Amino acid sequence: MTRRLMKKTLSSGLFKNLSRTLIRDAQVQGAQKTESRGVCGYTLSGEVCSATPACAGVNSADACPAYAGGIFQQPRSGFTLVEILIAIFILGLVMATVYASYSSVLKTTHEMEEELNLYKMARVSMDRMIKDLSSLQSYSGSFYLRAEKKSLDKYEFHSLSFWSASHLAFGENEEEGRPAAISYHVQEEDDRKSFSLWRADVADSKPDETKNAEGGFKICKNIDSFKLKFYDSSGTETDAWDSSSESGEQKGKMPAAIEIELFIVNPNDQEKSYKFMTKVFLPVQK
Image (cartoon, rainbow, N blue to C red; front, side):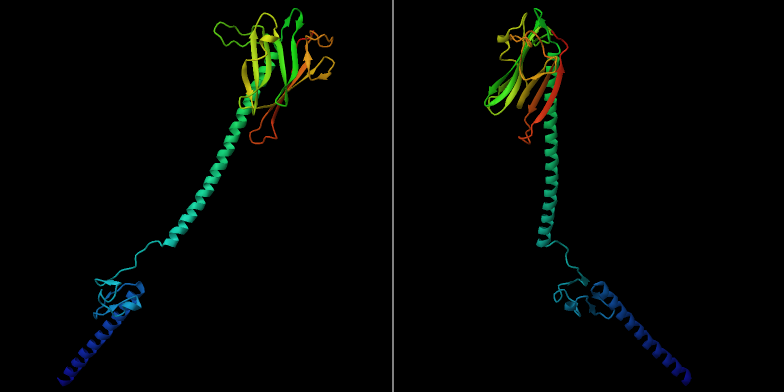
């Protein structure tokens, strides 16, 4: 009996010591894991572990601000003033780059539209002059065409008048294709800074220089130069023509060809005007 009692006593003592050792090891491991996660709370022994040195061994919210209700509160997330200013600065750089690119594209598009309108205006003017000259008419067996240079504010421009069956009807009772005295001349704009090309068209039964000297309508604006060159049947070039003169080479005759040069002001570069040129071969000779 005594031996059995002693064995039983020793077995129960060893079991208690072993249980205490296991519990203590579990507490230490739990505390270490809790510290590694940065969480503060009660352990099995009633002690408090903290991930911050300032709260080590503290189990009240009054002594440790990071502790509240036995649960560790992580610091609040947010942006500092310096971070906000840096973000605003970066946003400003991005917006400035986008605006510069947009302005450049918008400027290029605007310039292309201006050039397109300018080319369209020049093409319409050239086509109109070609149609008018290709419809020359004779009167009493002679042709009438007169070209000369005129000075406007220290600039020289050609003026051209002739008899042609290319009348444009703008009234209700008028008919197109009637013989008319047609003229092209340059006039100064009201701002006195630019010039424009005008076309006058007066229908009549015979040529009359006094009826088409002025008036008409504008067909091309911002003219920088309007030049004409005339070629006779032998290929001789001249810058003037008058079929009503007494000269045997031009009297009652038409030139074999007329070269038209039209220069329009470039709004983006005043020194480099747009140049348009064409040559009209007249189908009639006398």
